[in-house]
Length: 383
Image 1 (cartoon, one colour):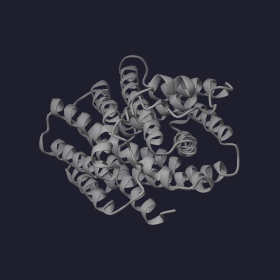
Image 2 (tube, rainbow, N blue to C red):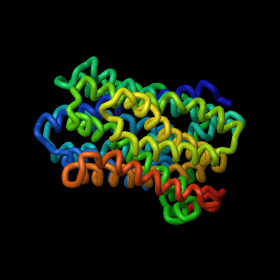
Image 3 (cartoon, rainbow, N blue to C red):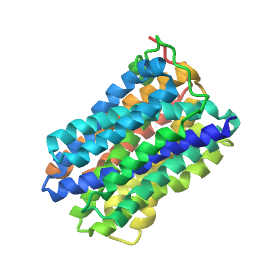
């Protein structure tokens, strides 16, 4: 196994997590300070979902023309330029377009980066090494809000730090080998409905976790502000969710190499349902802190286990195609989560955010309980 390459690719993707963790809360807080409501902020958070859907379709053609490594490096540069545009031009309409471009570029980064990682690791260590990647990514997102708390949300320092991190990523990948080989005729975004029908639980888990990620980094700070928490406490509580995500990933990875992975998947789903239901009840009590940890841990465990289940089955083209389907489903979750929760928070109930997560977790639990919900499935066809 190429350990140095594993470390370089993991580091490059983790830097993206840190950049996102700094910039997305800053963007939402900036819009809230300008007087925009939850729906407008949710619309901004959902805009990259369109870019994600486009990026999933472009991953195969781009990687087949330039190679997976060069495509990943190029998209990191495009992401940095998108954030630079957000920094230089303070217009809501333009920010929508730049967020779309950012979503497109980062989708290709995640599809190719996670495919590269899964291709490198051996199956006996897959749970631990994929979980190590997940933990590092979660810690990077945790560090984002904490770093933003140090830099302050009033100035532009957070944006500049995020841009610098994205520019560092391509340098780490220079000379690295072992990336998935994508054939020129590969159509990585085809067969999504077939993928969903064959593996409904993993498909819905990706939608749910994408909605979770978008909500935590965008609408959770707004939700907590509306519940009368001061801004420093809001950033700490947001970070606590990401800490929970990070804390459980390595234990899950260890267990996934020793216990039935499907049973672990179902357990994480049940924990997410229970923690979502308890969130409004314990929000203003000391018990909210362990609950936020459990909330983040259970959601993050779903993502890690889904990656493990995919990585044990696919290689090269098939692996990139499967991850492109995951990206499409991620885009759907990023689109639906902020829009539905933002609209519900503004027009139905202030607790729509945890309520929507509880409903999604219940649906996933029902899907995962079915024998065919997590059955093995064939690699999606190339076209």
